Structure formats: C-alpha cells, structure tokens
Amino acid sequence: MARLSRTWRFILGGIVGLLLLILLILAAFPWGVLRDRVSVKLAERFKADVSIGTIERVEPLSFSPTLIVRDLTIAQPAWAGKGDLVHLDRIDFRFRVLPLLRGKFDLTALAIDGGRVAMVRSRDGRKNWAPDRRGDKGSASAITSLTIRNLVIDYRDAVQNRRFAVTVASDERGFRAGGNGAIDDRPVTVALAGPAIRNDDAWPFTARVAGPTITVDAKGLMASPLDTRRMTVDLTARANDLKTLDALIEAGLFGTQPVNLTARVRHDDPAWVVEKLSGTIGRSRLVAANATVTRDDGRTGIDGRLHFASLSFDDLATDEGRARAAALERRIGPRVVPGTRINLAKMADLDGKLAIRVDRLLDMPGLRSLDTVLAIDHSRLTVAPITVRLAQGRITGQVVVDQRDRTTPLARFDLKLVDSRISTFAGGAPVDAPLRARVKLTGSGDTIRDAVGRSSGTIGFAAAGGTLPAKMASFLGADVARGLLTDDDAQARLRCLGLRLNVAGGLGRIDPLLIDTSRAQTRGQGVVRLSDETLSIALTGTPKQRTLLHLDRPVRITGRLQAPEIQIPPGIKSAGGILRMIGRAIGGDDRPLAGNADCGALVGRVLG
Image (cartoon, rainbow, N blue to C red; front, side):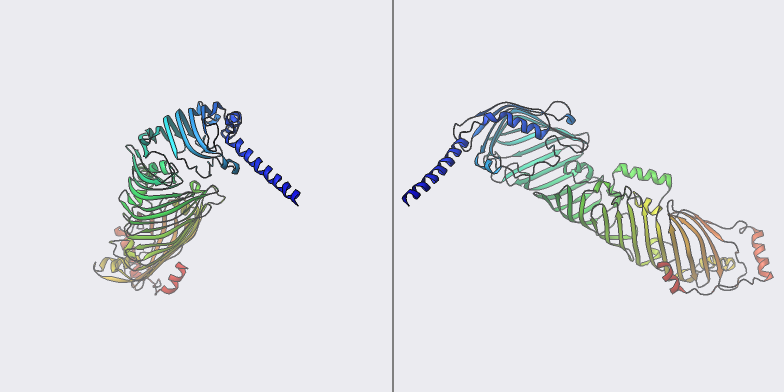
C-alpha cells in the first residue's frame, strides 16, 4: 500500500513538473523564432508578400511579454495596385500568453512608431484589409494602452467614391486622428478624438466630417477604446441629399433634396439600432423614426418605423432628377401614372419591414395622408395594407413587386377607391357624385409607368346619385335643341356612371361605358392605351324624350388622359348641318328613346 502511494505521488509530481516546465517554456519562449512562420501566415491571409525585419522579446520571463517588431511590410494584393498595404517602422505590443492555448490572441498594449497603412476597397467590393470580404468577427482585445506616433492611414473606396488621408496619434494627451479627403470628388475634412487609452474602460469620443456638401458631427461612447462594435452615438447630419450621406453610412439611400437630421445610433454587433431620428428632407418633415438593422450570412435585415408630419414626393429626388423628370414630361406630355422606379436589384440582399405614416401629403391635390407597411423578402416587396386618405374618401389595397429570378420586376396592383366623390379629383367641375373605383392590374417593368403600360387586368369606375348641369345632360344625350335652349343654371340628375376597361398588354378596351342622367343616356366604345395614356373613344347619346334636333353621329374623344380632346362631328356647326337635323325632325324621328339604366347592375359589373 505504501509502495502504491509512492507511485501515485511520483506520477502526480511528474505531471506537476511537466506543467511547470510547459509554463516555464511559455513564459520564456523566444518568439523571434516564429518570424518566418508569422510572415507565411500573414501572406496567406492577405494573399500578398510579407516581410518582417526582426522580432525581439523585451522581458526574459513573463506570461504577458512585450515584443518589438521592426520593419513590418505587407504588399498590396495585385488587384489593389502597387505599393504596400502596411509598412510600419516599429511595433511594440504586449499580449497574454495563456489565452493562446485556447486559440485566442489577447492583445493588451500596442505602440506604433512611424508607418503608413493604405486601405483599398475596389468597385466590386473587395477589401485589401479583409481579403475574404467578410472581415474579422472575433471579439475585440481589451487594449489597455495605445501609443501611436507618425502613422498615416490612406483610405480609398471605389464603391462609395470616397477617400481620406488621416494622421493618427495617441499618447498621454489623448487619441487624435485628422486629415483631408473627398466624398463624390468634393473635399472634406475628417477628425476623431478621445481621451488617452490607458485602460479598457468605456471610451468617450467625438468625430466630425465636414465639407461643402456634407457635415456630420458625432458624440458617442464606446464600451472600450476603439471598439466600434459596441457603442452609442448621437449624430447630427447635414447634406445636400441622402445619397451623399449614404457615402458614409452605406444604408443604400438615394438622391433627395437637402437633409438635416439628428439621431441616436447604437451598435451592439451585429445589430445597429437607430433611435429618435428626426429632421427635414427638403420641405418634408420627419418627426420620429426608429429602426433595427442586422447583418447575417451576407444579408441585411431591417425592422423600423417612419413618421412624417409632412411629405412631398418631389423631395425624394435631386434637382437633377427633377430636371430630368420635367424634361421627360415636356417630351412625352403630362402623365397620370407616375414613373416611380420599382426595380429591386439594388436591394437583393435586404429583408425586413418598414412601417410608414405620413400625416400630410404635400403637392398632391385631393390626397391628404398615407399609412402603409413595406415588407421585403428576398427581392419580393409587398406594400400592404395601403391607406391613402383623400379630401373625401380613401384608397386602400396593396401593391406587390416580385423580382425573384427575374431581371425585370413583376408588379401586381390591387387598389380600391371608396367613399369618395368626383369633385375630389375634378375640382371646379360642374359634375359631382359619390365615386368608387377598382384597379386590378399585373405587369412587368422597371417603373410603375412601364409596368402599368404593359399590364393586364381590369380598371373600373362607378358613380351614382349625383348632379350635373341640365344643359350638359342634354348634350350628352345628343339632344341639341334642349342643350341650346336650357337655362345655364338648371340642374339634372346623374343617375349613374359606369366605366370598365378590360386590359390586355397595356390596351384597355371599354366594356362598358354608360352615363345615365334624368334627361338622356350616353354609351361609349373604344380603347385607352395605358403605355402612353392616349384615348380613342366614341360617345353616342340617346335622349329620354322627343327632341327637335338630335345629333345622330358619335362624338369622339381623343388626346391624353390629362388633356382629352372632344371632336364634334364635321358639319354639325354649319347651317346645313342644323337644317338637316331639322328636316329629319319634321319628317318624323322614330328612333327609340332611352329608358333608365339598372344602376345597381351597372355598378356591380364595372367594379366586379
């Protein structure tokens, strides 16, 4: 038994001795012998030539050794151009040895004396500092001491067309980085400042980017020095448009009128949280917004809300965009259907939803407010439910834009107009009645206008129980005599109006068009071409009582939706034409009179 105990003591003593020997080796390891190994590993990572002058150990025995690396050079990858990605004259750094046993490099102190770093991002998104295009996702080391002298960082980004050349210093007076650059080829100055880095406590900082087209001020707090993955920042941003601001924040924004915004932003990797976003875009006023943005497996997710006190869609375009739109309108004429772009190619990696509320729509007569939710999932955008409140009534429904496995998106429109009136859309017109409408169209195109211009489906309008001038009612029924003799102030009843377009390939065929008044009935035939919004309609009227002068040829409506042209049959205005109508009346006009239409059936047909 005693012999067994001695055996175990011998074994345990051997194990302890071995552990002490391993620890001693680690504490005294000559790290300089790994110079070539480190060079090879760096070369593999950056896919470029790497050279290291020397690696020296300062303390002879320590579990937190300090190493001195001299003349570290990492060449630029071939695609990034000539020169060096990194050239540092001297690097002193301290790290903990024991975490290496777990595969973690725990850097605690760093000093850089002299050098230059040239960071490049190519147009296709490659980064010379992160060759795998994903960057490092490991946890940050708790650097408790950072000293930098004579270090220049040169950053060039072809994706966002931005460049900066910044000199960095860090000592007992604090951390400072500043220099010049350009965004969209317009000059800016950049600056970042914080207290001296002597521990891993929370680190306050300020940053500023300023130029003639953009000024961004940031005041924030990082969880530890230079740890941008865990920080909170209060931002104030002014820019000539959102796209210029996007050159800094890379959120996929577009060109607009000038912006002035404030927000609080939190980064808790991998999530970005935007809170208390408010400000102006042109004349539009954003009163509150928040969003959470995440990045996972190469895809961006967003969940947020936008609340506008007022919004003009014209503010969501630059002056150049407005000028192009105005030039296009001069060339093709005014259009009812907007040319809003719906191609989702630039949002292929975006998923999520955004709730939008607009209290007041500007520059849109008859339209008052908007509530909707935008939800996107792998290149399929659903805008639903949509509620647009009008001066009278509302538009409800949904729009779906699907670009999955398609170069050109497929758009589906399903919209209803309810509780409205004709006067809401034709202010000042002498005709008024309750109005309803239904649009169900499917078409492909890069813009709403293109998609509608190639669409198939139905469009229906119905009105009932209104009024119109009695003179107009007579003329609609081709009753020329009563139209000429009726008092201008006299009114007639608009019993019902129904229009349905059966659309195929962007061509809408009328089936039916019926206007039924207390004096007459008018029927129409023809087509509406949605691609260019042109009309070709023939109206034939039938009075509800005998008349002296009856127009027996159709009135034609041509032109565009925005500016229709009414063509009276030739000869009607001449004395001969009037005499012929009188002659037919004297000879006896035995054509049947119109009765009352079944308005309920008409409304059901055009809206069904």
